[in-house]
Image (cartoon, rainbow, N blue to C red):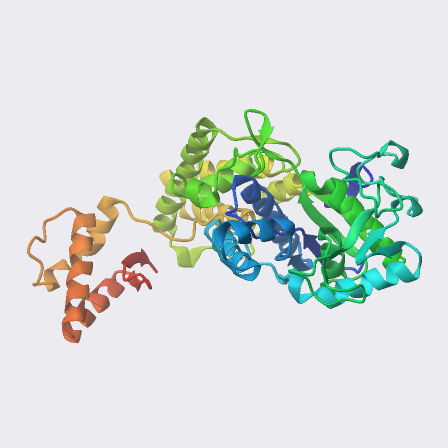
Length: 479
C-alpha cells in the first residue's frame, strides 16, 4: 500500500484516491520569464517520478502542470529585453519545455496557460464576491482572509500570528492587511473583466486551472516547499470558498536545492541553469543526483556530489550495455515479477523512498553481472529485465545499447570487406564507423544511392541503424 507524507495533515497517510483508480495530479508549473535552473530540475524530476510510479501501480493518472504566462516578473523582463510580454513568455516557455525534454521528464497530460483560462478565473472571483469572501476596490479585487476559518492550516501558522511583514504587502485599499489580490487593475497590460482592465493574481491562476482541467476536488497537489505559504495556502482558501468542498486530499512538497546551505533561486543569484549543468553532466547523472536524496529533504549542490553521481550511474549504464549485448534486448521480459521488483515497490510505497529504490537497481546490476559471468543467461536476463523496469519508472534512459571497441569491431568485421570504398579497413572500430558514415553521407550528397543503400543495408545486417538529425548530424545505434 502506497503511503505518502501529506503536508496538510503533517503525517504519513495511506493513499486512497477520491475516485477509485483515477488520480488527478496538479503540479505548479513555471513562471516563464527566465531560464530554468537546477532547483526546477529537482522539482519536476521529483513529480515526474511520482507520476511514473503511480502509473506503474496501475492508476489512471491525469497529470496537469500549468504555465504562468502573465506575471509581474514577465512584465519586468519585457521591459528589460525590449520585447512584448507574450514574446517573453513564449521565449522562456520554449526553453523550459526543451529543458524538461533533455532531462527525460514526461510531458504532462495537460499543460494549460494562464492567459488561456482567464474566463475560469473571472468566474471564480465573481463567485467569491457574491458569497462575501472577496471585495472590489477601484478595479482591484481582494480575498477576505480572516473570513476563511481554516487559513493557515497548511503552513501551520495561526491567523492571529500572520501580520504585515516581508511576505505581506500592506495596501490602503485593503480591508485587512492580510487580504491578498485576486485581480489587479492594469490598464496597460490587462484584460477585460467586470472590474475593468486588469489581470489575475498569481494564486487564482492555479485554483482556476486545477478546477477547469481536473476537478473541484483533486487527489494530489504538488510543488516546491517554498510554495506552501502563501501560494498554496491562498489556493486552498479561494478554492474551498468558491467550490464549497475540500480542494486537495494530499499536499506534497519537495525540498530545496541549496548552495552553501542557501536555497538556490534567481532572486539570490546563486542558480545554475539546466542547460549549464547539462553541458557538464548528462541527464541520467542529474536524475541520479536528485533521486539519491529523499524528495522532502534539501539537496546540497556541489561538483563533488555530481561527480560521485556521474561515476555511480556510469557503472550501472556500462553494466546495462554489457548485459544487453549479452542477453539481447529482444529477450527482455516485459512486466516481469520478481523479488527485486517487490523490494523496489516496498521502497517507493514508503513515501517515494527513491534512495532505497536506487539501491535495488544497483543490486540488480551486480546480480546480473554475476549471472553473466557464471554463464547463467536465464538469470542474467531476469535480473536485467527487472533492472530495466525500475530504470524506466525512475526515468533513466538506458534503452540505447552502446558497444565497446571490441564489440563494434566484431560486428564491422562481418561486413567491412564489402566496403571497397574504405581506404583503411584496419582502423580502430569507432574511427572506422566514422569513415563509413562519412562515406555514406558523401554518397548521398552525390546522389549515389547504390553506395548509400549498400552501406545502410550492410549495417542493418549487423543490427546497426543510422539516424540523421535535423542538424545534419548522423548518429548510429543498435536496433
